[in-house]
Image (cartoon, rainbow, N blue to C red; front, side):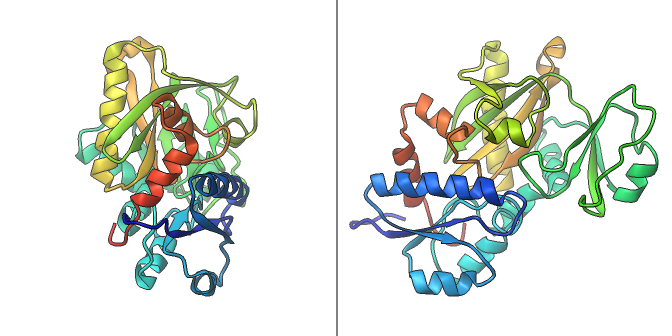
Length: 304
């Protein structure tokens, strides 16, 4: 979106997903930043009546600050396409594709991007036996923010006892040892590489609670690895058809050099909270948070 007067922006936040609280935090930060950038802003806690909420607000553009299912998987994007309201971040197909971890990895493989072996399996079967040799990770195939992640160590004698809240079909992937890193992509530009330092698994609390993790930017890496991270993130963004802002996560096993670098997933709705990684990378590149939000709004469109 471009033009003269600043558009009226509706920020969609909250919603019914498992990541509701994170989305509310992201949304509040974005509302403040967009107001600071000079926009007229309406905050919408997205519910089942979202179409009526949008009709009442009559925005020129929607800033999508939803996380997780329904807001990040193509559903709300389809509603906005139907209503003809320009919106931010990725479109219907890229959002749905990136939310499906196993299909994302199939796209990565087709593009020559490195991933670990993985499979989809019934939840009950995963409870009963090791569906692949440990160590491995079990996670929902279509949730983000490390919601519902189980790590099965190589010394585990019994399979994981998954919670009943886990979906009937789960993704099981070989455990990738090493450092956790991430790269945000803003349009056609990979911003930087962040090394995520935690005392354990980079889980939901580590991602979103103050002090849960430490971010080193730029990551202290061999130049070959830094350049590969930037290149792979941009290729993932383009191959999946992402738009606006995305973030791709990596693991790197230092002992294996470049062969030890693998992609985990691409997030089409990166967190916009005080501890979030993409805004930190933008700031490192000299782009303030209001400037980042301003760019995201001006990038908005339909038919994404």
